[in-house]
Amino acid sequence: NDTLRTVGTERGFDVGAAVSAAPLRSDPGYKKTLRREFNTITAENALKMGPLRPSRHTYDFHDADAVVDFGRANDMRVRAHTLVWHNQTPEWFQEWDYTDDQLEAFLRDHVHTVAGRYRDKVDTWDVVNEAVADDGSMRETVWYDAMGEEYLDKAFQWASEVTDADLFYNDYGADGINEKSDAIYDLLERLLDRGVPIDGVGLQMHALHEKPDPESVAENIRRFQDLGLDVEITEMDVAYLPEDDPGDEAARHELQAEFYRDVVEACLETGCDTVVVWGVRDSDSWIPTWFDELTDDPLLFDAGNDPKPAYDAVKEALASD
Ligand code: G3I
Image (cartoon, rainbow, N blue to C red; front, side):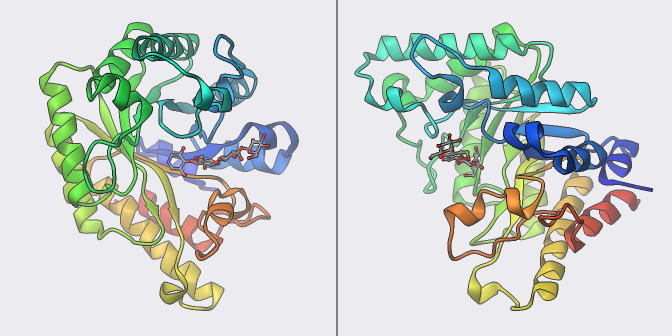
């Protein structure tokens, strides 16, 4: 029987899911679905700085190794997420009274150690995540405050010194053409002009409060490709506000399936070859804990590991010419 994994692999397409270390240890149904349906995984949290850095001079690779090893053992492409982000930094870090030089040295060591550890195990890194604010200005993060825009140049350079993985910039709310994706386009163009080793851009595709027009997504993908960058859909999920929710579950699932199909088709049509969904089952999703107002079934599988209409839509899109 065809699965997402077989139809994807058949046409050279990577279908991925974000995974957590805990259910990999304790939930056989979760692992079975992952192995059968996906040829790509990304760590939802385990490779972020918070979970990796219990204190300033130590690392804890327990969960990160579990996720990366699962991917390798099951012949999956591993998309690693993420070396530099303003969010999910460790608690001790938020109280640390550093100098700019100390912060830079800390980040360099972090990038060298983490990307270096997985040198032969990771295929792609989200090196920098969410550096641009929603209005298109540079986001004022600790990294930006200490190093200016060049923190991106440095992070990509440091990563390139220790890994052969493809190096990506990743962001949300920039899936179609809009103010934010314009700003990201300009930023990445500047990085490329400065010779920064960047290979691609990840469009997260959290289709939540607003959904981008699929034609605008295709146009957006093309302009980044024209810069010489690979483009991947990296964190897709699809939820609805009450006013956009058709009301009954079956109708909502059809609407959701249509949007998943449109995005996969935009991807196929432009030669983007990767779609990663942000979790396996609805019950694994981050959305219910973060947004009360949104519908709570944003993914391809229900809590019982059964495929939803969105699953069939993605599979059909991947199976068609
Ligand atoms: O595991 C700890 C647990 O030990 C602790 O006791 C508990 C108390 O807060 O927190 C648990 O960690 C939580 C973690 O998810 C694992 O469940 C964190 O608090 C929580 O903040 C964290 O949320 C993650 C979020 O990033 C952090 O900003 C979500 O799972 C994750 O899906 C989400 O992913 C991000 C991408 O990295 C970047 N793009 C947007 C996307 C959605 O926000």
